[in-house]
Length: 130
Ligand code: SF4
Ligand code: SF4
Image (cartoon, rainbow, N blue to C red; front, side, top):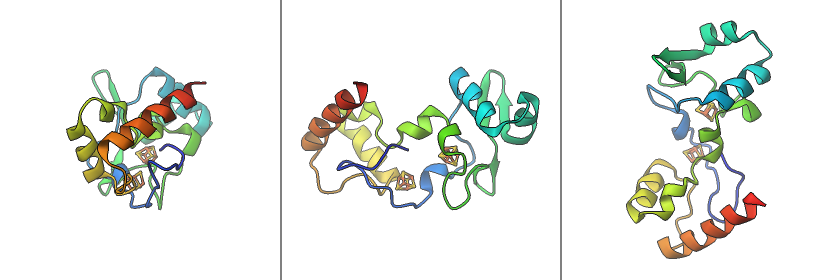
């Protein structure tokens, strides 16, 4: 989840960590999570991951990510897609993506128009690239 800013203020609803599946992990996520958990990789595989072919996701328990407990419990060990949420660059391509993400995340600004949001979001992206 990104740091809070004018575009977004987390409401701690936990919606983004709920569901029967989770985001998938890329190779950097795999390394980061293993390092963070300070366990052997095989232990992490057995305890925390659901592997389907080449796709690695986190296990879910009672309809939420295994690492969710009143918020994310692995902070800097979480996958990059979780860190990026809800400010997904696809918002800039299409207003319907903006509306869909807004539907899933009550933390997205309700006061900025789509055009204004995109303007500020583009600025946010370039500032965070520096
Ligand atoms: S869905 Fe949005 S508001 Fe809710 S916990 Fe996730 S980031 Fe925060
Ligand atoms: S790793 Fe953390 S932020 Fe990502 S889905 Fe699991 S609990 Fe939520």
